[in-house]
Image 1 (tube, helix red, strand yellow):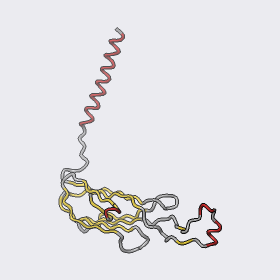
Image 2 (cartoon, rainbow, N blue to C red):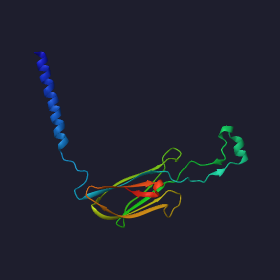
Image 3 (tube, helix red, strand yellow):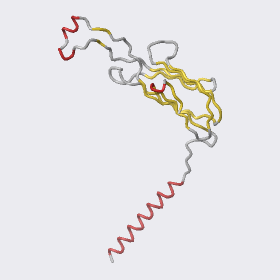
Image 4 (cartoon, rainbow, N blue to C red):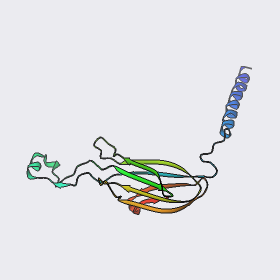
Length: 167
């Protein structure tokens, strides 16, 4: 008799839990974007150029180094910050300067921005500078894109493909 009561209790509890999961999987309704919106994601990880150029060691500097540490060039580790500008339909949408990561400021700079825009045709202009220059940009990309409702456009950086790419 006790076994029957235990099984009935377990069935009731598991059934209630399954019902609860079923209800909350359908309600409340979730929509990541409005029905007439699209999403632009600017997302990349990029190493800026080195702040200082590599230079040869002097003979005195080489003599101070252990034999296994004697390389011909001395290269500083610090990298330049990465500056990104994004314009949508000629209007500034995002401006950011990402500092390099790491204790020695020698890691990659990370940029992530999510922008919700109305679906339709948009003129996208992306510029990126990864050097210590204060004006101008090393990479630029302009394109007209047709975004459908709920479409996600990813703006990435791929050096092998020539720089800024739209996916």
